[in-house]
Image 1 (cartoon, rainbow, N blue to C red):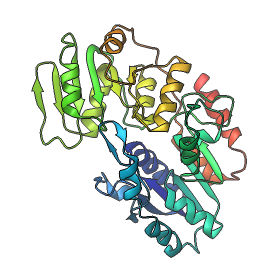
Image 2: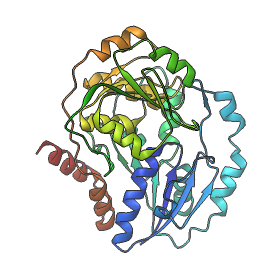
Image 3: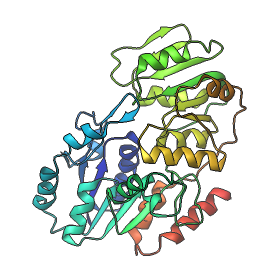
Image 4: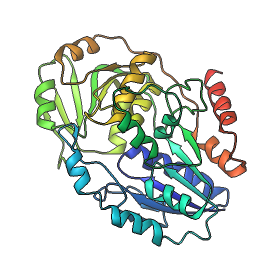
Amino acid sequence: MKILYGVQTTGNGHLVRSASIIAALREKGHSIYTLMSGDSEKTIKHPESYSPFEFRRGLTFITQGGRIRYLDTVRQLHLLRFYRDIRSFRAEDYDLVITDYEPLSARIAKRNKIPSIGVGHLYAFAHPVPVPRYDPLGITIMRRFAPADTPLGLHWHHFHSPIMPPTIPEDIYSRENRDHSKILVYFPFENPERIGEFLRSFREHTFHIYTPGLSAPSDEGNLLWRTVSRQNFVDDLSDCGGVMCNAGFSLISEALHLGRKVLAKPVSGQVEQKANALALLRLGLGSVMHGLDRDAVRNWLRLPPPEPQNYPDVLPRIAEWIHSGPWDRPEELAERLWASDEA
């Protein structure tokens, strides 16, 4: 098949997951062309994994200080360009569109009547998963952002729906000797100085703080500032005692898979992160704070480590399911995946 693969570049999880599925489908003989959109300033690691590819603006949100800036988001949408990119894309020869929550490819599929499959966490919200009841507009926008004929949603539980387990990258591993005083911190949407000042007083723990845009690593007492590096990040995750982060899906999934305790702070105004925080609490998988709460951190640091979730190897099975077809019964794939998780 000739496949158009849309990748949202705003979060690393979309890129890591898509690279694995693209590689698996190419091994099976399929031709893949990748369309990326989102964060235009993001450095794409290992671009050969997606080649041939092109980048277009698409749609994305503007965040500052841990909050979505709705006015700034509206100002930079460029909707005329967005729809012009949809109309101008030559899609006549494609047999299938796969979108990892990428809005251009999703609408190219609709416009050209090409079957589409959506792979990613946000597609779980097509089903009755925990969501904040007081934000119906946000839920509607999230569900319609990158629509697909067949949504393959990912979540930490199936919620009695055709939802798949999280996709865990191959490079995630766990060391036997864990340092329970070592805490991995990743708040890419927060003010780093504010985070550092907040954590400095918890002197019995060391905080490995990964900060986008940091020019060089540095150590300040119990605060270890680190530049963003996938390998170093994975190494720190492998032996840390816990993870403090925003309520994005991918990092929390990796932490739960390894049995690391999680304290999540959802980005204000981001409905997906609010929903993720709600799911963490309802499933009893992690802790949540909605501001920089010293009591919440102090209580969380005292908690014992949870049992690893040990999610199954989802990505090659999704690729095989796409390769083999038909694509009309995703519930059978979900049942097999969760059954293998329980085995």
